[in-house]
Length: 423
Ligand SMILES: *Cc1c(COP(=O)(O)O)cnc(C)c1O
Ligand code: SF4
Image (cartoon, rainbow, N blue to C red; front, side, top):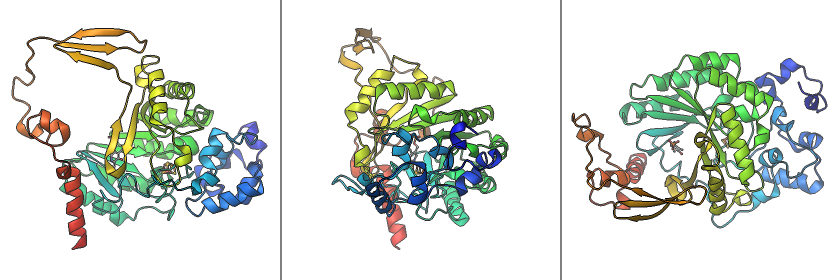
């Protein structure tokens, strides 16, 4: 227990309680009066918070609250955890379900958007409700797990769709489920022969690092195909406690990734992002994605321009370890999925010549071979069935001569579900 915690409103709890994730969950700050004991709120703040709670509930673990600097109204932890009046603003471009997760959903909780992987939302509960949550239409709605018979329905779908080899378990936060319950879900999915890997998306290493306890580690270790993606947004979130949690996961052999959201006033600065990604790799976490803030309702105060994201990428690529550089993505509205964007490095393209520029601003020519013909697969190992049938790749592989947007596999799938659902 740190000095900070001893001096906090939880000063009376024992270190055992503080380090127990269930105690942390039980003692989350959920109302304005308790919050007011931790940070100073004026009457206007209080009214704004009460009002925004009608849209997305508040829950802040004592641990995460203890990281807030109470004297700084722009503290990056505070901005992520404490509701603000700006959440009530609905901009014209805002949408309830910008990612069409409900549209691309064949069974409750399951979203099938990409060819070989699906997203399964196993609970809508989180240990801390991020004010920038893109799934705010759902997060905290019932504070409950997805019923296991829905998990069974999803598993049936997986059995019928053997092309799915990667299942993302997300929510909400799957690690708010009891370990035994989570294992039941993992077992069911793992039992589908065509599923090769399972990914867990969880913010607990950041907001509830106590959750990464020995019981969880023992469970995770039994499976050799589990990856975990977490969600650090700012270097101050990398604390002694969160480092301990990351170490335990890494030592259990769970590959770790991080997905940050680019947020105005929190991490929209190249130096902050660089410090963050360097601290992550130091702790064996690979920065995976940096997201442009989605068009979910009430998030306009958090959004940056895309130019800011590109500036940050310009600042990272070449300037620090390649594996510390995340892919900057815009999750396209209307279910277009994640689209990577990056500064332009390909300056021009001529006959067998590519002109490139590097991070220093130097320009270089790469000479291509003049008589190149693809010659992989001399043994015919790659059969016709492995040729991509979707997207631009299908044109390159020769499967398709044209692409008509309405015929995208994803849209056809969604149309089929609608027909079967309306019958
Ligand atoms: C992000 C996401 C995935 C996984 O995408 P990757 O690029 O493989 O990480 C899968 N399904 C849905 C619906 C997603 O939003
Ligand atoms: S942990 Fe994830 S799902 Fe939960 S509130 Fe934060 S961003 Fe939303």
